Image (cartoon, rainbow, N blue to C red; front, top):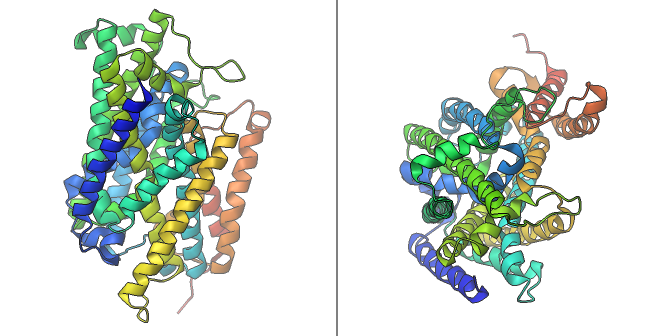
Length: 491
């Protein structure tokens, strides 16, 4: 596929996106930027959240990981089902009852100002890193297959993408993102379905044959029973459960869209609908991954390998789609890839701006500044986070040497753990804490987890931590909060 055709796809898609942005951001103010004026349609939120949740990580890394992990990722996805139920039935009622704009203001009401700022800080840290990972994987593919040949440096490619995202989220915020995510989810899913059909046609498989072909291959294993490995079923299932609770229910980006619905009931319908569709979509991505590797093996295709001689799994899907399945496949792959790139950062950029403006600058409750002054401050913060995101992605380019999906969830285990511990302690106990000591507990917990993860094989008879590291982190935070808790006052 020629670079000119790829660039044409990018330009046409961007023009379409900006047209929708212009239409939906007319008359936008701070209220619509932060929570969409609580007027979002629940079905649009549910559908658009699919694209925001999947992003480039699922689009590229999940199919690529099938080569080594088989269908093991489905164990994590099954855990998502339980986790999203907790989000809908436990967390959303709290957010709606307290009428929150930033979900971290719950921590202020429950514990105090230090806890509040700590929760908001860990979200900013978590979401900045997570968004950088997600956007990196998409931009890196375009860099390798298009812009390197044109002599365009990586940082320039990233800068252009972030500038585009900045421009279409600059004014409308959540109000705009609800609609643009719907558009992007549609193109991403269309690309995934068509890619599956293109490769099954190359393998001369009917839809009925696909199941039997995968079942007969060594890629179809779902359940893993070795307790020492990261792929052990309980580790994956419960890790997935708490990842969904932390990375959705305790994440301002995802909850910002949910609490933009008119009522709690609408928000809950959104989450349960989103959960069901997410299960189906992840299964389809795993099917696509198995077909990709079957095609590679039967066609004796040489894939890119790293310095250790291992296949670079994140390059498997783009290599096949762009070079072996024809022009139509390449076009739809690029469209899907771009659709994965934008949701990777648009919601994150909006949520980071919202949290900093509300939780650190107190912009929403400031009665002194005019609406015009508040919007000016919001714009400055928005631009600043775009620059930070650019720097983090460029740094990650310099140090990355692993599949992005594994890096993403490893980092999440460290940074979302304190949030999980804080909310669990607040919701399931009635104790207060020494608020000034909360930041210390939340910093020590990830450090302890990092140490446990590094030496677990030596200390625990060969045990290797997987996604359950998030649970351990949350538990350590919970115990630390219990240690600094205050005895109830006797009246």
